[in-house]
Length: 173
Length: 157
Image (cartoon, rainbow over all chains, first blue to last red; front, side, top):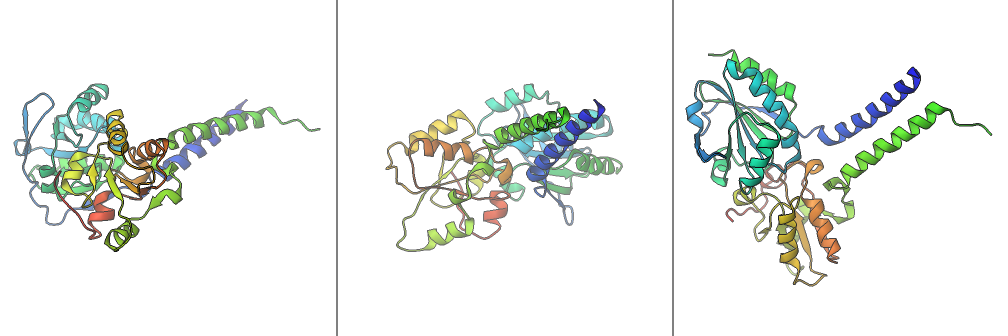
């Protein structure tokens, strides 16, 4: 019986490994941002109608995530962001989602479904251009307490990668 | 005649099940589009810049916000074809066209292996009987594989 279970587990692991390798390998990019420019400020409407202003979070470490509900890697990242927000909120982390969906309706459903615990604002082309063009999703920017961009993450990025960078940045004052 | 051991049967069943799951997921993804139906960015640019050749109707089936930031000049925004609303818009747009019309679909919202939009759009056009449809192969995203390459770009809606 143990032998059967071992073989079954081996096959499942091989198939899952192949799938993960072919679907997520080599599609993420992390770029240390030179000179750490100030993150461009913006004011965008949140799902509840309140305005979100990025600069009002100065003093916190901010993970600014450009995403969309229909974007598969974005969907995969969301539960990790929820966990990170919960784990590091008291240390000064604030995750902010900027949805690039065409309208807020699917975003509201998604917000409930994924029990999101951080603010989500509706993005626009102007905001995308402020950040050098958001022409692929997801794209995330890690911003230090001083409001300067520390790193840019393009494409699906592992939770461990985010956590390592966030915990390091949280230690700075 | 030798009989197949029980554990081997079990292994075969699990493999078949796992392959079915992967295949069913793949069926909705861009990776399931045959290579013959793809067109590379470089080839599309050459086609657009050539004289005398039929120019395709180019349709973006991704995000409006991304389209507003950058799109292929002359292309039209339809909406994400992963949604029923997007598919309806697409069907409505192409309905009056001859079925031999040269159409290029593109998205570029996500890496090719994750794009949820181009495959449903391609399927919809095939189902309507269009015979000259190509899908623009964008391996990473529209920014990396089109804008950063210096290919022609337009802004606005």
